[in-house]
Each structure stands twice: as C-alpha cells, then as structure tokens.
Image 1: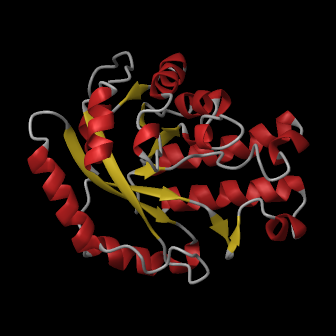
Image 2: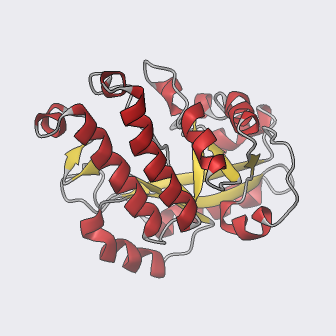
Length: 253
C-alpha cells in the first residue's frame, strides 16, 4: 500500500482508494481470501504515514451474482467501507465470455445476459458504484464486434437506464491498459446514454493491481466524462450531496 501511495502522490493525485475483491461464489479462486481486519489495519497504517499528503479511502469490490445476494447483504451489514463497488464477472458460475459461457448463448444473448445481471446488481441497492460496465465485451472472441450496433445499443440503453434509476453511479475504469485492447470501460456511447437518462456523476478507477499502474490513463477517463457532460467525484459514498451541487467541469485530480 505504501508503494501505491507513493505512486499516487508522484502522479499528482489527491486521493487514492484501495478496493480489494470480496467473492462469494465457491467456484471463484478468490473465495475466502479477504481479511477485513488485516486490510483495515493496513489502511490505518498508511493513513497515519501519509497524513496531509494524500487522502486514502477504504473500498471493496464485490462480485455480484443474484443467487448470493443475501450473503453480500450480511457481509456489508457488518463491515464498514468508504464506498462499495459492485461488479459482474460471472453469471451462473460461468466467467464472462469464456468458451463455457458462450457455448450456451448466441452473441446477443451473451451480451444481454450480462447487461441484465449488471442492471440487477444496481437495483439491489447494495452498491455505491457499478464497476467497469462493458467489461470483457471487446474480448471473448470480440463479442461486441459480432453484434449489429443497433441491437447492442438497445440492450446497453436498457441497462444504463436501470442503473441511473437505481441511484448508483458508474465507474470509468482504465483497466484495459493491463490487457491487450487498451480499452476504457464504459465507452463513449454508454456514457452518453448515462447522461441522457439523467446520470450526472462518475468516479474514475485505474484498477491498477500494481503501483506502476496507479493513475493509468485517468486523464483520458476524465476527458471522456467531460465530453459526455458528466462530473467526476472522488468520494462515491457522498454522491447525494455531490449530485445536488452545481455542475462543474470534470478534472483528473
């Protein structure tokens, strides 16, 4: 964590969020690894060490599948975080866009099932932030490229409208830089729909996984938000007060 804080300060960032994964699917290799007390202690240590240099948030990214909603509720009821990200990585214990997932679905169903799961995660009311919308859709055999634009955008629009209605906000995630496609999630079309349906704020995440990726392409992500007419906030849990404030131009700081 100290290396990540040093990297964030060097990158000129005023805030950093540490967001470990919590998994409840027995098929997930990360099941049982999260230790709240250990992470909380480490957060407290770096907050003391970097007082006055950078603001440090304690978040969590929860893998969402509807069948273990009760477990997520129980976990969040007994653990305090500055913000909670909900992300869909699998459906029915099948990782997204793998051969097993695609074997049971044509391209439209593969994408529609994913968007439906994301919309339900938002409507669960469990999450402040919806993580990396459109994740993996440029991979998995380039599933996005195998759909007509109109069909894809119709399914995307239904999902985004439900996210806005839920009160959750979108994360703009630059993790594509760790993969081969260099994508930022979600793309311009999704952000435009989010604004059209009444979305106002987004948060930015480099999803770094290592110090050298801290802040990766956040300037590009902020520009995407600004182009869509969205504001960037750095404290997702306080989104209610942020959304009632006058609009301002997004920045990467």
